Amino acid sequence: MDIQVRQVIQKLEHLSPEKLAEVEDFIDFLRQKSAESLLRKDFAQGAEGSFHRVWDNDEDAVYDKL
Image 1 (tube, rainbow, N blue to C red):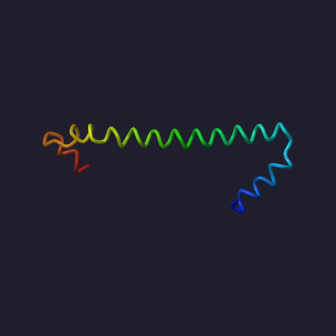
Image 2: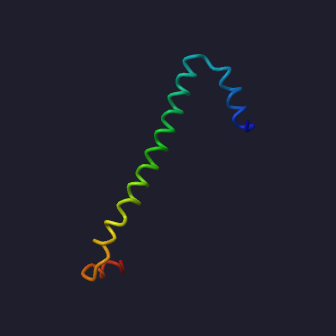
């Protein structure tokens, strides 16, 4: 086990049950935030091909220089 993980576990062992619940909620929040970020990135990459056809045209080429 990583030394940093062991240090966190040691600190957790000294927290009250109420504080442990707060830590657990925060961990869940961080995991959800990370998952949502990955999901947004996946959606953006998935839509990129569709948008490329719309954006890449001679009519709008003047905007490419901006």
